[in-house]
Length: 255
Image 1 (cartoon, one colour):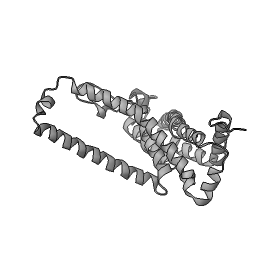
Image 2: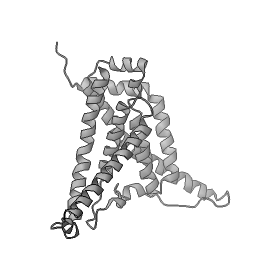
Image 3: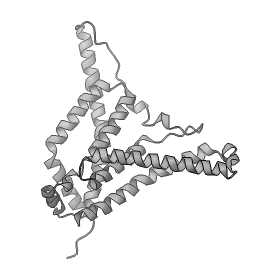
Image 4: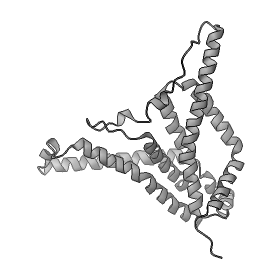
């Protein structure tokens, strides 16, 4: 009988395997996140940074078992296709992780505010604690990067799209690199950014030298709007691109 390439039943079993094997780890991890959010619940930049940094660590370590001779053989012998395994990885490192971060933030914010106001009511320890209303600063930021504005267009990259992009990059790194996946992926992204920056500078100078610099000073279009549109589509297309590359790399790893 021909084996189907994609089966929701096998995907469900892969999710079940993941949570059975890593239940204690997941419980401890999200418990720690609740405690962290209790302390930084009213500082939006720290919370955004925590979601991004902890997220890429989470993605960079997802496929670490395939690089171990013993664990790798056991992983590739699981009766599921590489597409199904990658689908589970994408859901876990992107959508599941993001949802759990929001849930732990809500729990941490509620617990932190409650404990703070309870200690403030007791009025001891030199009045360190003061009553504060329940705030949802993370939601009020709209999950946007205010520092990513392009010109005067007011363009803002959506936080979730940028989150998917960063997760897809580090998920690829977890498949590609055999050790120190996070640091090697981080170094690779820095090298790529420097390379692209150098290419941009060279092209700009060539345009100026060839006498087309006037187009840069007085472009016949809204340069900021154009760049904002380009970046928007780049962010939308890059996560699927890195997921496809991860699929082919995972397939090659099996061979």
